[in-house]
Image 1 (cartoon, rainbow, N blue to C red):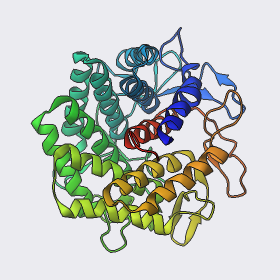
Image 2: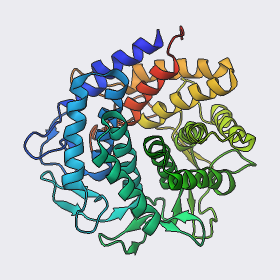
Image 3: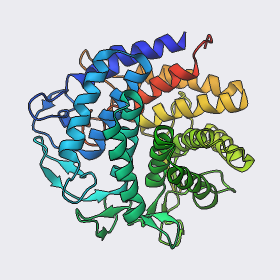
Image 4: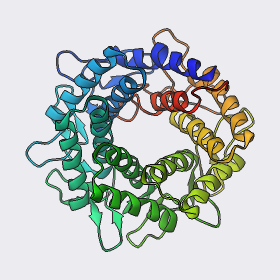
Length: 391
């Protein structure tokens, strides 16, 4: 059964890779694993990665109830709140060194959202009230400094003392975006879990607003794609289609809808239409999902997180529609991932990506952007979504 296959992959392949990176001396987890699988014990540790470690081990403990995962979650929690959290000016740093000293002290709303997400998940696993207090504190920072009430959008990048900066961290292709879908998506993801944890009415209000923002500002009702980058007036800046973010958004928005009990056909149809659109436009002959399309150029790199999020997104679409086409897509994509993305080396995990010629990209397999989260969450979600059936 698929559920058992997913659980075995998570506990036998993914989590052991990250567990061996536990830094007993300086806290947290070693910041870099090179492509050759050598560990840089003095690599910088990302604020995003630190949050993703905390989320992953917290969620794994909740899903599997293995005491060992709780120990790792506790270890990740201590590093996040003692070193990555700025106790002077508040919020999470973008990057710290291997000892936990700030290297890049910028406060990015994207990083803060992952802190909220991880701390909320840790609270759900442990009922540690301090963690929920930290999550609510960061939520208030996002709402105080990050929300632009004039255009109902979240800002992106700030100095350590919360003065706004140009959004260099999450812009690309020669433009500097004032608003990104990526940041809004991960605020939505974070607030969904924070609302589960807190039941706070303001969190509910802000999460409801985010779902509406996706429908009205980010989702292109004509093409069924999401826009990616915007100026301050919500004008799209690039003809860019991010296939992975679209299918990830499909199921994350649906999670928010369910948590909020929003019975709104506009939102449900959006979730379903995005999934069909990506199924129609982004799946390659081998069953994998292409990365993105910029104007007419399609990037055929098979990126690890895109495959992971696509499997959850299409499984969610099947649950919404009962269209077995989506199950066939998931099955073929999982077989592709096992054969090509999962690193077969004894100490490996998943490659960052695979090139169109089938060769793994020689890029670090552990670094500030690559940590347990996308693929551990994929396993946990698939375990929940295939419980009690023979898929």
